[in-house]
Length: 348
Image (cartoon, rainbow, N blue to C red):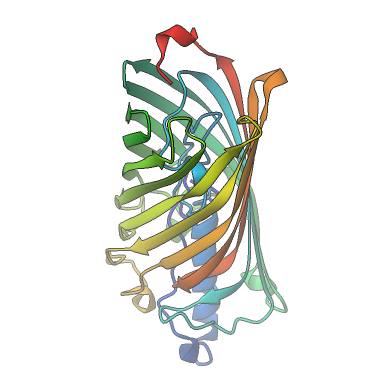
């Protein structure tokens, strides 16, 4: 996972890129060996992408290249303070869709990506404005099994791509939060497409995000939030392949219950690849294939006041998938407050 890299596959289970299959279901028969290879690389990319992000004990972002990692924290501003953040991401898929959305018949397929990203986030506030910086890195395991095809199976464990968010700016009003940020995913190795044996996407990604939250009242009890992000990918190390840029929107609608101890709602996400993959080393059958995915699911958080922490759980189902695996995503996050300034120095 890459954002953390939300990487080329599990990145963020890490976190970046997410598999892409340019082939159609009809092509599988005469091109079985090629299909198996492309599926392997493509799934691998999804996992290296789950480096991720889920934000909060007050909305910290560890990166979100993998759709579905932010949920109800999407366009909200963290409270001032220093936070230690840990996110466990579990992604499972048992089918792959081609560029037309048709299921590719690859037999009994099982993809499991598990990533644990840890990081630090610091926010300070001046009047209605806030400034946040974050750094995070994930450890990821990717396991791919295709029944009766052991040559296409893989089981890898390692460090995913590092996520750095040097600048996140927010503006807070009584019933509105507005945010804008820049993040950077730095590779920790070479992509499998270039012969790498690890879990890095193998390329730098620049991420630009903007969004906000609208609250139903000044008590901020019920809200609607969204964050749009544009990922600009650079060329991969050691191979002439550049991942196409992607646009994603994440967010949801929720409410604070029991005096703010519990927060619950419905999270959504959508990702669209807006530029083709390119490069002299890009396999021909992958040219022109663009990722697309939507997702929906419940999002619940509980404040543990005794240890100044928040535990958040989110589960989302993939739908409307094209050129990538289709599966289910579980995110469990823990945010621990290490330091919080006096309340008088910040504005609620």
